[in-house]
Length: 484
Image 1 (tube, rainbow, N blue to C red):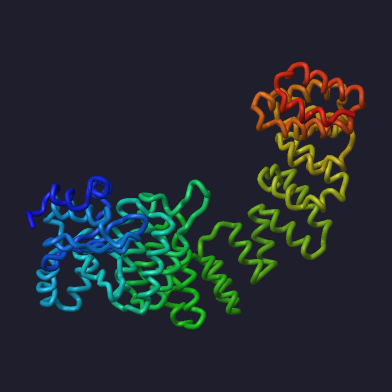
Image 2 (cartoon, rainbow, N blue to C red):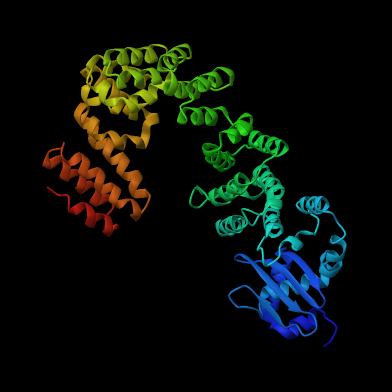
């Protein structure tokens, strides 16, 4: 065979496969490459990570991709070999060097490999299916999709009980937690969803299987403290699952856990006094402290809620104990003390209780209208005084409210029927201008006001729309069905 070069590869695989393979090579999809005799092996990132091997003597080859070989992955690996020989590990030479190392030295070498040294292919042996090196390179290149995450999780779960991997998992966990913004932190923009759970659950299970030293626990604590995206939660859950059967293990990890987790664990195990002590010692935001105190000392929870003006917690307590007068008293306090966020939450959460009390309904609606929260105020519209209903419609008719008036056409119909036609036509014209996709919305609006207009006035509106939009046959067909 001729000396290996690009022309030899092109002749062997053809233009189409060569071009695709070159593109893969240029995109840095060759993750690892090593040579044993005349056999070149490596891992290439395609739809997933593929194992690829090729003989340099006759270019016979195999690949774990669906084609099984004769593919772009083989071409990419060969091009990597041609252009980056200094990055291709000679396995025979490497094995010779490693046999002279102690166990501790070997572990250190593996850890260093996570920082970029090309020693990782050695631990990627087929019989153990440990692909840590490949996965780290995937993270570094930012090619972390949902399928890759599942592949990584499966690999880790296959090797849960391999003791020497503990330090690798610790380093691996740190890397992907603290550098996740490099690859989007496992967030899918299209679905608006995260897909990190499998990998973090797998690493959490792997670490929970190990005997963690004091140093290991300190490292875990540092990662948990520096986590900005709540990615360490599955790890904490896995550690606590083990702690349920091993209380000594809980004592050893207790100092690195967030206070909320510790208290919930203590409460689940009926260790109430210790839970109270944690709540006194640890720095928690008031809402979390109150929620946790409810589980161990309801009276203290009320006291803390009162001190911090967390009235929603107090209201909920009195509703649960059926002391509705006290619950209403705290609703009034939230309004009087101008606790805007809490009033909004109260209006949404305790609508039924408030609606049973005319005076309280009036009070909260006045506040919500002043704050411009018409949607929240609308919930109580049927149980407020007439003057407040007039004020409500005035707010709806303010210029700044614009197109949103369509949500309150029934209110305009009731309080200001004389201007309903003009308001309706204004909103309908905006919708028609949006195109045919909005015609169903036009029909819905017309149906909404049909019940509060006499037949003659309603049909006049349809006549006007048909005259002004006579070329819009689809629209005309839809609204003609509404004629009375």
